[in-house]
Image (cartoon, rainbow, N blue to C red; front, side, top):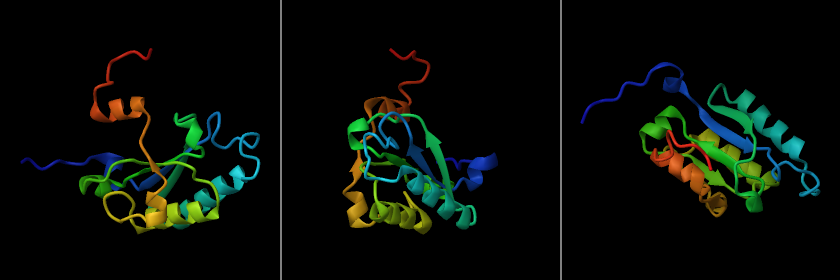
Length: 144
């Protein structure tokens, strides 16, 4: 087995929370009882206080709209080296869900720390297109 060399920014990539803010996630008309901006502000504040161990970014629609809000927890470089993979979390609304996600990220995230059991119940499979890209089969193909 050959050792892999990690170059550039990937060497220190933190646990990254990818927060869906597409058509359904973050939509106050579809989920009027949830303060979507508060959630995003809270996640960003925790990332700012993490000393670079957590990053937050937003993206357009991730796909599983019936499970909004969706957050993908991407492992840190070390977490990936230890076998961690991106973990999709559905129904991520409310302080309890945010607390569990932030705790897992602060503890190291995928590949390093075990999620709390309540959070693990919210894990969802990625949409088919994401699974295909993850296996490398979708490279070079045009979208239909």
